[in-house]
Image (cartoon, rainbow over all chains, first blue to last red; front, side):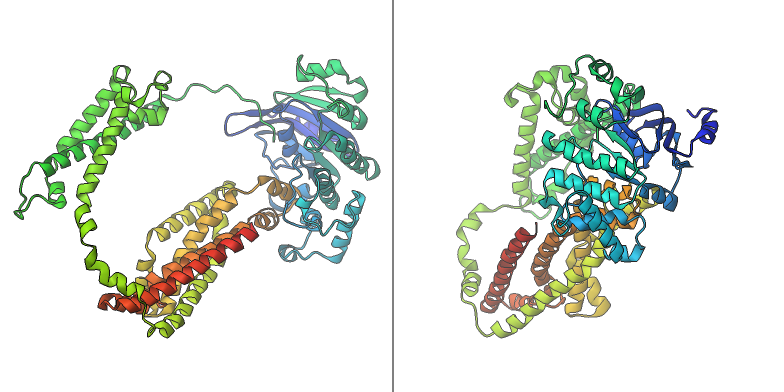
Amino acid sequence: MRKEGATVAAAETMPGDAVRIENLTKVYPSGIQALADVSLTVHGGEFLVVLGLSGSGKSTLLRCINRLIDPTAGRIWIFGNEITAAEGSELRASRAQIGMIFQQFNLVRRQSVLLNVLSGALGRAPFFSSLVARFPEEEAERARACLERVDLGGRGASRADALSGGQQQRVAIARALMQQPRLILADEPVASLDPALRHSVMRHIEALNREEGMTVVCTLHDIDLIQRYATRLVALRDGRLVYKGRPDDFNGETFREIYGQDAVPTSTLTT
Amino acid sequence: MTEPITVATGPEPRWRRDLTRLQAIAIDVVLWVLALLMIDFLVIAFSGRRGPTGLLVTPEEVLLLLHYGWVAVAAVTLATVWHLARGILGAPPGGALIYGVPEEERDVPWTQTFRGWFVALLIQLTLFSGWLITEVQLVTFLTKFSKASDIIRGLLHPSGEILQQGLVLLVQTIFLAFMATAFAIPLAFVLSFLAARNLTRRNRLSRLAYTLVRAGMNFTRAVEPLVWALIFISWVGIGPFAGVLALWVHSVAALIKLYSEQVESIDPGPVEAITATGASAIQVLRYGVVPQVIPPFLSFTIYRWDINVRMSTIIGFVGGGGIGYILKPRVDLGQWGEVGTLVLLIALTVWVMDILSAKIRERIV
């Protein structure tokens, strides 16, 4: 699948590019093709929204960027370093600079909020002391500051599953923030939340983008969230990149183009 | 995670279809063999023939007289015929098991299918043959109670003489079970992660470890604790330590099974999240897996201690220490009063352990 131009493309990678993807293809062992020849560049500092129906390959694309899923073909650069075949400490170092936020929050439910946030520091924590959950005081201090950032200061001692959905997602954002990442991947971060809570969570992700200069790649469905937060859009259909555009050009027409003629644009205000 | 799109796959390969059909026929052959053998068995048993002992034939003698070769040939023939003529006779049981009951036979009551009658016959035959093979004697069971009344009277009138010795050994029994469980925990804890499918898919080495741990576990579990006790008695000598070791080996295998099933049913989300932070495999285990499995692990461990208390009685019969050690000679000598005391002590302990472990497990999970 790899094109001759791929190496040239590597040379062309701008120092400011956060992610560069060339001809990415993923076929699962079951024969399901999730991504087909996707090429995409994520510029440093942008808030890129990925659109598409369930099953269009959005989750797979995000998970290829931090190699939670190994691509079948194609190449991936993160901040100029190729990580397509990275292993061991090189792969972990790459993952450590990419924070990830999940639809189902993926907190360790029985553990304290603070320990959940601290686990964001595992990529740089001393190995043996991390095994007995002893983190340096400055890390604990930083974790508390991260919780403060997402308006959950003082909840550190609570068990994670004692919090509401919106609060749990903010803990997950604090965990990602704890990594001090340069890139945030957010996989449907508000799809499991009440519409009324969606903006409160999105605003925190936006703050990381605007105030900390972190690049964000986020999958979203709601048209008003897209128009409000995205700086650029791409869309996937059946594993192929079918649309690139600006949120200003995005309207009901383009929405139906991506989602099919029967789709009705939804917004958090109307759902 | 969202559902990825499907790529059209070709038809099933021919060899796999043939294999499935062979499987269906094989099941039918086995069922026919069973049916025919039992018919043969019953015919011989009721023919009134006398065996070499001069008595009416005993189950062992009948089993020796069976026509195994004929039965095998007949079974293969019948199964194949039924399979080929399934359009007329309806789906055979093996076919129904592998492919599911065909659409047109779903609503037919079992009395109107050949398969239904065949299965009913098979169940009848099993019941009759079982009755003969296990030599069920209902009349004796109902009329000869008086012979056992001595034992039962003894059990109901416990003797106080052995109470003190019994209590001392009961304490030993409980600690024996406790030590066996305690020694089993660390080993089972470490090995259970290697015995969990979801953690060992990643590379060839871990898949090998999975296979080895699973095989070792199943082998160890298959050997009775009583046999382990005999092994360890010749190893470390008669006494409670041999019992501890015997129960330890068995507990390790049992706990690996229970623990690893728990590991396999964890929520993969946190594991994914911890992996995404750049944590190493061990850190992922520590932060993503272990917190999810600690409460069920505790619960299973207490349950295992409970089981070990019950098992240690039997271990004591062969010299593995504990209360069984003084129980066995009294059973052999027919000192039923003393046996009654000891049985009562064991029953009380098991009862208390059962209530306690249920209460604690309720609290934890």
